Image 1: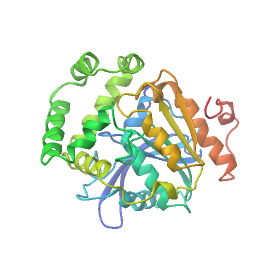
Image 2: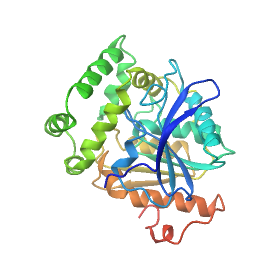
Image 3: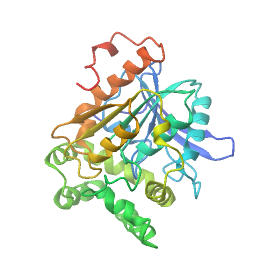
Length: 308
């Protein structure tokens, strides 16, 4: 179910840059700062119904309504998230990262331990050179940074396709030639697929810089240690994911020894979020109650348990 935002605007950061954001769910629920995928934007969570939490989706620099910050690194992102939380009157918060947003969410958990109450990594790209990339589209993405000029060329071509074709036409091509698992084909054939591509279009409308910075950050050594994450962590992945192979989740589980690993049989990269969004949200209620000592609504407790 596609969902309208509660609020959308920009935040002025201390260095004068603008950061685009959109809010979803319950304004009085436990706050969750959301890190979108690649190459997406703040509109991404609207592909599913969000309830019970106050989910704040931020455009990374260079995407959507956020000003670019060329040369940014993963460890720069937590300061932007903290500034956004301050501007929105949020003290402590959980953080979620989907796909290409997972490295950024992990950076927040590692570098903002006093503010982050918990972490969800959802079909997430893992640190490079740890053997997880083989067999997935992410392997091609990681290679772009290693071949001079290839990232600029690939992102430029992709941007022209996304901006030049109607989402319906691009979706038909994706479903026909994208080699997606059946679970992903089913969910993308409906409104979710159009929403994903509309999010790509909004992400890239002002230029390719956000995507280029992401490609570099994914492939180069990360400038923080995933093993430093001490907050409660849940890792979600579908075993049929051929965009980011399930081996990436296993890497995260090795690096974050206390994490709960939830691998869903038969689910792909896109279907996981659509089919299990309520279960994923329930993990934030558990974090709020057990670790942040925050009461949640009675409705929240009717959600299935995390990992269910």
